[in-house]
Amino acid sequence: MKLENIPARDKIKIGTTVSIVQKQDQRTGKLTDGTVKRILTSSSFHPHGIKVELESGKIGRVQKLV
Image (cartoon, rainbow, N blue to C red):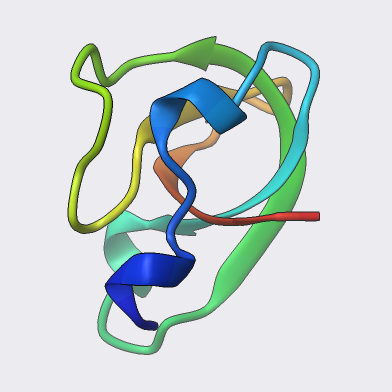
């Protein structure tokens, strides 16, 4: 995934539906959809995506907004 397609922190809000890549899926690039419960990255941008926790409890880096 290209860097310019990865959403910055200001685009991600609690309750936003996003696609994340979990740590164990980074090699395959498998995405998991869910609703943001908590934003874990404090910086405004991260090259691999802003780290969030979903309502389901899964944690990963946001690759795109759904």
